[in-house]
Picture 1 (tube, rainbow, N blue to C red):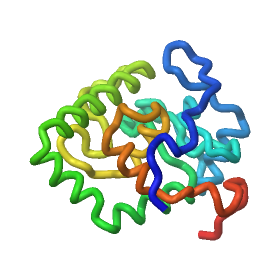
Picture 2 (picture 1 turned 180 degrees about the vertical axis):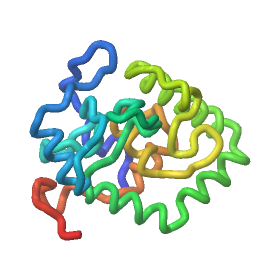
Picture 3 (picture 1 turned 90 degrees about the vertical axis):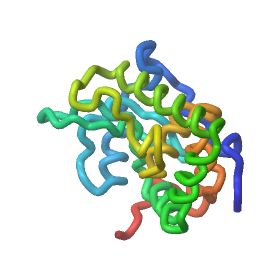
Picture 4 (picture 1 turned 135 degrees about the horizontal axis):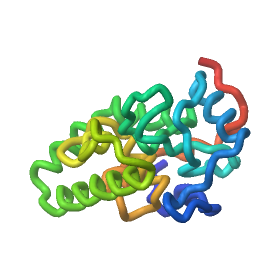
Length: 187
């Protein structure tokens, strides 16, 4: 079932940090995201978006992980149902089609470049890391390399910021609808 970005769950409403705009994760949030990923979360500094069940489905990560590794993926989709649905879109060729459109649609290319700048600005609010300065994620601003990042960005900041993230989000089914996200998925 196709949806519009406005049909998706709303961005996390309990924004607390005036510098970043996202609430700090609770111990339960870190546990949930770790369970969803099947390994401990590293560098989680906020919840970017919550599923209607209340668990995080996108987390915000520090630009430098504990141990010093630069990490450009600020918005990280953690919910296995969400990531599985996005992977299906990737396998159906959506990234290739979007990249081709970037080559021919100047308005889309401009909006996607603005999304890249938004991504960089939001990450810089979390700290400066020289090794990834100017590098966003997901292939921005010239291509589409990872729909997971674009969807996570769109969910975290709301509609109208990342046009290709919004488009991918609109193509997703309601990943949260079949089972509560708190139920463990079998690998």
